[in-house]
Amino acid sequence: MFEVEVTAKVQETADIHLFRLARTDNSALPAFSAGAHIDLHLPNGLVRQYSLCNPPHDHHCYEIGVLKDPDSRGGSVCLHESVNVGDRLTISEPRNLFPLEHSASHHLLIAGGIGITPLLCMAERLAHTDASFSLHYCAKSPAQAAFVERINTSEFADRVRFHFSQTEGRLDMQALLADPDQGTHLYTCGPNPFMDAVLQTAAAQGWDETRLHREYFAAAASSGEADSAFEIQIASSGEVIQIPADKSALDVMLDLDIDIPFACEEGVCGTCSTRLLSGEPDHRDVYMSPEEHARNEEFAPCCSRAKSTRLVLDI
Image (tube, rainbow, N blue to C red; front, top):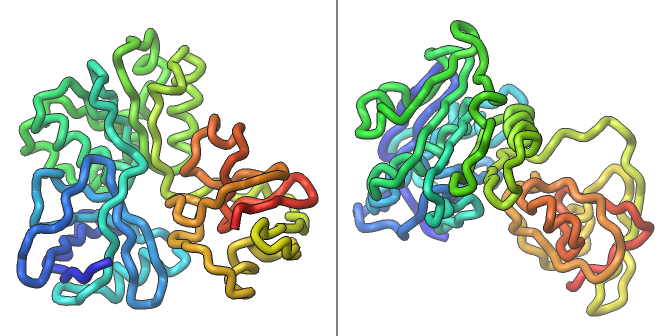
């Protein structure tokens, strides 16, 4: 963790701000790769993850684009209303759970709304290395799309297609994803329903799962069914902990002073991922792939629950 200063706060749209972060002495920041994010410690005590959207070869600042979410649990609202130029914040070094597959012959980037942030960084990197790519950016209208001027004046503007649903209709995913080339890799980020539509369409069109890459900003909403209580056993001590229906396993373990790292508390970042020794979890995180869920080797206590009566964790 280290401290940075907010050197710019730019209103991109009515509800999206760009924040530029730099060291107070303007020295170089830790290097990052396209698709990376940082953990941002907010003044209200929350920790949130934000994708970096500036070119990876820029070593003197980090840029993040933040949507003021109407359903915010305090993160985006705090940034929009309480954080200003000159303020100092603590951040983590960049981590990347959404990397480019550099062996691909072509990269297809599909962004929905604020999901443009990691994909813009990818486009900057791919253009810098003269790699083959195309970017499709979906939003309701130009007024609700961030970084439009930056994209239109970039060296890769001719590789970008905007899709504004209020004026020209939605992106034709069926046509775009038809007849997939085996050398093409797809990357998508945006609201969960948008991403689900992209990935489901790709799967139906014959795309191999290994060529589909995604980054969710939040775990899927609950189905509305009431959760059930379950047990967690700590392997090192044999202690059995009761997890009530109305609390997460992470909350219960923290209340009992069990040392477990965490950050987002939303099933996105993977910080709290814990090795699972036995039991059948009800996976609700979005950082593990479907294949990783099927293996049942890890458990995200911040959001996931159990299908079996007990889970045994390697703690």
